Image (cartoon, rainbow, N blue to C red; front, side, top):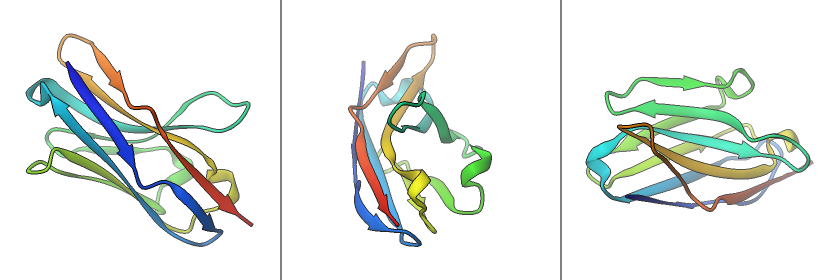
Length: 116
């Protein structure tokens, strides 16, 4: 099993920045992809950014150029650097770990609120 714990959410003004962290533990050797998702009130959960074990990344169009996903393998942690935040970025941000065999694990989420 894999456990993932998010941190770093909070309240920020429009145009500001936040960095989210996702710490993984357990059977981390089985992880293939780590991703950040978000869910705004009344909306479906959506992919924000993901990174593979080899470092390949992909982003939602809405965050390209503003958000950066990275990983520190020594710390088993994935980061999401969010710049130029806008009110529409307000959501609960979740970390997801995909593992071999198709099993995936979600964190409990961290709330990001961007005020205008």
